[in-house]
Amino acid sequence: MEMEFSRKRRRSFTTLEKCLIFLFVALTGVSIGLIVAYVTERKSSAGGGGDAVTDSGCGNPQKLTEPSGEFTSKDYPSSYDNGDSCSWHITVSPDKVIHLWFEDFSLEETDLCSSDFITVQDNLGIIGKYCGRTKPKPLVSLGNSLMVYFNTNDQGIDKGFKARYNAVAPESIAEITGAGGHLQGSNGELQSPGFPVQNYENAALYQWRITVPAGEQVRLTFSSFDLVPDNCGDYVDVYDSAHLGKG
Image 1: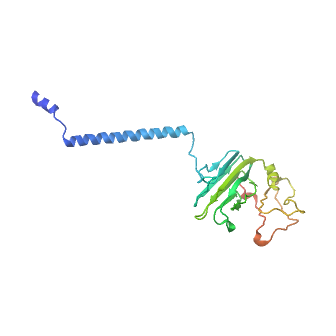
Image 2: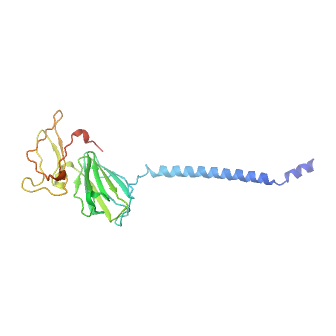
Image 3: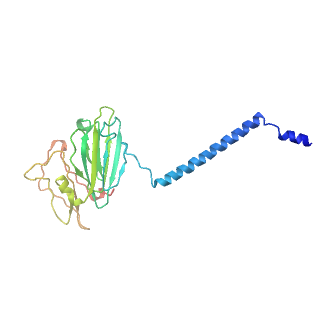
C-alpha cells in the first residue's frame, strides 16, 4: 500500500488537468489585472481635483469663468478645418459685464455670413453674426454671461481668429463702445453717438439696460428716430426685464 501511494504522488498531470490549471491561472490573472487597473484609475481621478474639462470643439476649454481670458479657432494661427463646430460659454461675477473683442479675425467671406461665421449671444438672444476679414467692433454684454459659437462649412478655410475678454463694471460700457450702459432712476435719456450732429457708425452695437425703483414701470418714448430703412438693416430692439436673466 505504501508503494502504491508513492506512485500516485509522483503521477504527472494529464493534458486535461494542465489545461484546466492554465485556464484557472489565466482567469485569475485577468481578474487581478482588472482590479488593479480600476483602483489605479480611481486614484488618478481623485488626484485630479475636479471634473474633466469640456472641450470647446476647437481644442481649448468650453467654459471660461476667469475675470479675463482668451480663446481661438482650432489650430490658430494656422488654418481651421472644414466642418468645425465650436462653442464657448463665458461667465463672470454677477456684478460685472463682459467686454469681448477680437485681436485677429480672418474667416471665409460670404453674403449674409452663410459659410464660416461666428455668432455671439447673450441672455436676450443673438447679438451679432460675423465673418470675413474685418474685425468686429468691441462689444459689451448687458449681463454676466456670453455664448460664442463658431461654425464652418465643408468648402473654403482661412486663418481663423483670436478673441479676448475682460470682466468690467457696467459703468464702463459707454466708454468702450461709444454709447450704451446701465441707466438707473425714475427718468433719463439715451441717444446714439454723435446725435444729432453726426451719423452713427456702420456695424455698431449699442445696448442700454434701464432700471427703475421697485413698484415703477418703464415708459420709453422716442423724440427723434431716423435709421436706414432698407429691410431694417439698422434697427432698435426693446425687451422687458423678464427676458434678461443671469448666466
